[in-house]
Length: 291
Image (cartoon, rainbow, N blue to C red; front, side):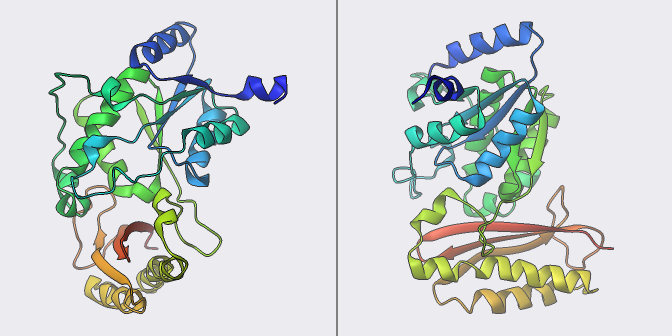
């Protein structure tokens, strides 16, 4: 590695106290700090967030932490991909300043006994299928906000409900941070990029394209004037059921902020899907503006 390449390598921090101390020093210099919370296994979707942070802020921090509190006992915490070395190499290429990769013990030391719960929007959809998920998300995100003292945090639209939950938490708890949501980054064939896509077999990978196709159909119908959600659901279901290994967890048409379901479509809407393809659970969504 050349010296120039070495200079671009993000500074790795594993201790929350060190991260806070470094950030405090930067804030005293008037630096604007951007945070990209991730669980690692980075792909182009994550990198788009890191690039936005780099372009808009003086200092960029990418957290790389597989958070145990957002996984239920029967979920894939143990097999979730952990690729820190590869993640550091990717972030080196775009000039990220810090990568914060604490251990679970550092984030949740012996005696830790706090919790964070946001009602309303967190109780729908993922909240029904994964009842403790957003409690764990809010807990770790709030800790990351407090540790990094970031001015702005960047999230991807693919986790649309999560973004709305985080926004609600920030609003309700008066957290002094901006939340920026950036568009979904897709593979060339339309599949939303996800760290879990690597779990798919070749055949399942092909079948997973029904999610984006179903959202295309929903957008076509709604922009074409369809107002009955039941009609849109039926059209989406037919497309998804073409894949023999696909099983629908939910299809949802709702208000873009509250996510409350609409039986009759009016105004702009968010369409969200969760589908299991084989053993892999995939989510996707589409924001549709009604003209």
